[in-house]
Length: 319
Image 1 (spheres, rainbow, N blue to C red):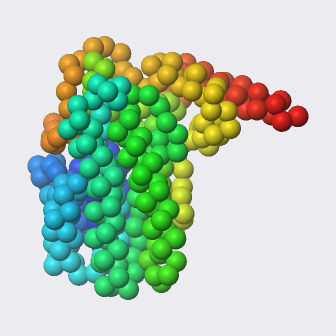
Image 2 (cartoon, helix red, strand yellow; image 1 turned 30 degrees about the vertical axis):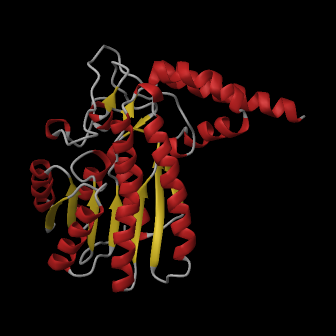
């Protein structure tokens, strides 16, 4: 296992979910940490958790959608620790609803956090690496950066952009010795993001099965920091789902909406709201959501079966 003793890593989205799990894992491996999110109170809690594992941690409150805010966080990191060895970018925001039902300001703010925020963090990270002679940037993408689904237009749009940006940065990094850019793209993960998201469906989202833990994703993220890779999926069904989307798009389009209703939306009616898209919701931030690892949900079995049927249909057409 790679040691991070004596190395400094900045983590965005550190107050919740994958970002928080990554910060805690790095703390246990000896890293000095810069914890970034919009929620000072929760970041202070995470800082205490990291310090309890023996780490030195700095809290830097920033909205990744605001370039000046991001630059200030990186300056604070340089002032406190000097060289920055790694950056993990996990922050994102999303809203559920048919595209025309999501208010423009909510859609735009989701894009600003998830896509423009990635550009802001990458720009500051690459500048820091250039000054110090190199470093490792790991960006959290998503299965939804490779496929599409109804009711999540802002997130799908942003994550497709994130994947494209990361791929471009990887190509450009070939001419910058010592600088590495990696992409980690999970499927469903048990984090609070689904309940924190905006919704204009009168229903909360939930992670599509099979559901992985944020700790599992964090292990892959930390591995990519130490041993950079072009991309690392997390989720046993990821490649199968992408294959169905690309190889038999007609079949995929017919089944994705019922599957989304069955496995991607929670039961019970809630009020429409922007969630945490326009501002943080401190009370909802935590390491885990409420879903756990539900491998045997009926929706998961239906999804795998449908993908298998689609793949078989494609093979028959080719023979």
